[in-house]
Length: 536
Picture (spheres, rainbow, N blue to C red):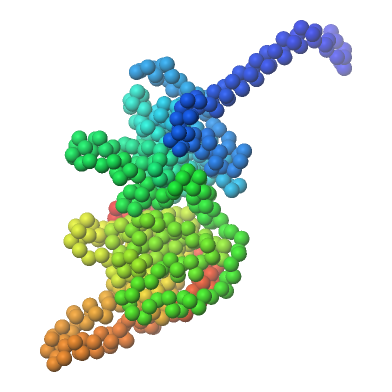
């Protein structure tokens, strides 16, 4: 028996060599696996991907995330299916790359479909990997970003593939309003697969390489005899202008990633955090005299609400969302004295800023997103009303317009409103008026707050007087002028406390900054309930 403190006999040279070789073999095996994982579907398929002008899944992740921060999970997973020749191909990772990393120093979870492996088809393993990434994101309280490029459900796996999508949709729903979810479309997305991006907060589509549709052109031709190409049916411009499915349409993959990085800079990591403030680079007292003459004296003459937004908020900070869809309304993110805010407004340059079905959906969705993630709302109201017409009524403008009322009324974040010109009827009420509990409402001297415009009101109120007058045109002109003097101004509303102050337009920026500072720690609560029944 050895005495305490005595050394063990040294190993023989043969023992050392044998142990070293075994260790080397283990290390080499890890390296070999990692090489297989990094190679994806192999050089030929990667070359094919590049020939289409598309990056691989790993190249995309590396471009999106801060250099060297990506940490992959479940890279060794393979499917368990054998039907239809699936036993012959069991690639590591199974066509989906998942993990976590950082964007501009902030933590995110990310997953990317790998088109070089089985066409990026979504099966049981892909569903498990995405589910784990989303579970991690919710547990850590960080945004999740999906990079979509897939041939769709893996047909060979049958119901297991469908179950995988179901688990994804379920998690998209649970994560909604808890963590920001962003979908980047970088290839095809068809059938049931489109519902995951549709459930996320923002969809970024890349022109010429991405598309989304429930049924493809061939099926449509067979069923309805309609002939349509892929781009017209579900390309980036179609979904960013016509359907409203896509919030952003970009020229390249690189621009898509830049869009995601910029978008994240306005958003908190989760619903328990405030939106991240940026360094203040713009004078809070800056006042632009051009605002004083921006709104024309003639109420029928349009002006550009984007100019108002650019001059009021921190210079260069406005990031418009849904810029090409329902252009009679404007929504987007900006900064006011470094603080992220949600901006909503009518655009008089398009349809006079009237609210139609698409504008209703666009505004309501954005307001609810901002409220979910603690982003204050600033609204610029200038609308002659809701869009009239049989098509709008039959398509449910009542139901869609009610979404705006619901969204603003439900929102508990700070809500500031500026009435720049027309505030007529229901359109005035729904656009974050005092009557649905906006915190502070300001008006410009050009504001017209009334049930309707002077011309329409006079036609209804004084039809007999005008028709019986010796000079109907002169009498009508006199009555219109009288109505405008009494009602087409902000002072009657201000006298009733429905407008908190009438501002010189150039004062808008510093006054909004002061109001936002007051309401920074606003406390508000809603009645206890499971959830409301929004008029969907």
